[in-house]
Image (cartoon, rainbow, N blue to C red):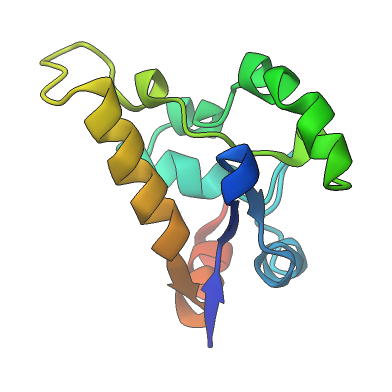
Length: 125
């Protein structure tokens, strides 16, 4: 089985974690304060910096009122901040707009298999 990790909310230009993915990640013991923390670590060269890939409280607050109109708690929003997707060590190599477009597309289409989730859960320390 494949799980869609995120659902994109175009009106908010933000993502919510797909409930089916969240349930499975939680069931397998992969969730911490968010069910996508472990994925951020993998996306960022498999290190703990990745747990902060969606530390974007200012952007969430900016969308708070509109999120409420859709019945969404702003704390549940995951927003692509292109500056969080570059570290300045040997670049950046692309513009903020290009990084934003790229990561938005990646997260819209991001699926992960149950086999991979199970493997990761077995190796979790």
